[in-house]
Amino acid sequence: MERTKLVWLLGTAITLGMIGSQPAGAEPAGLSGSYAGATLSADQVMGLQGLQNPLTQTLIQSSGVSSKAPGASALALPAAQQYQGRLDLENSDLSVRGSLYVQGESTAIVPSVTYDIPVQGSTNVYAGAGYALINPDGGATPLGDRNGLVLSAGAESGVLPGIVVYGNAQIGVGTDSQTGNSPLRWQMGVGRRF
Image (cartoon, rainbow, N blue to C red):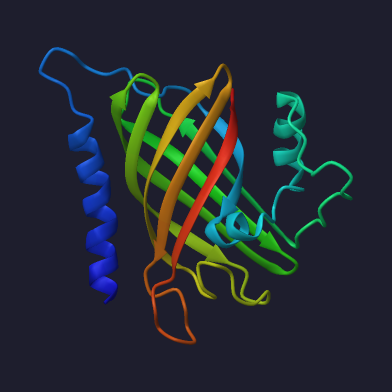
């Protein structure tokens, strides 16, 4: 079962790269530049939690969109804070990325290196590997409760000047000591380019 997840994750990244490929001589530009953003995991999106993340609120307020329904009180601040960033290595197909998950004493820091494939305009798909650094005293995180290899694949696109949307999947290879499983995590976010 775990091998199936890994094959699916890497296969998706390769397939997306092939779908977006263009004829020889017509190289797509792809997304260039670095960004930092606020991330929502799939479970947060389904419950509409995470909108009170400070960076998300800044981005929402700068867009002029309200994050609460008319007449409703502000959403409660969720315990989990999640961030992601990309450092573009100029003149290279590689990027250095980082993810941060904090919920009380539970923390996961995931530095990684990805191979970026430009597919069109300001859009990339990417795949890579990193290492999850889990706080051993903090309990479980969405990527498990112990340090280990993390594989990722995703897509990112510049949608407005200075604004990037991104989504990815991460699989922690054997990072759950209680079950021995490899947790799979889906997430998406909005970032600010710099």
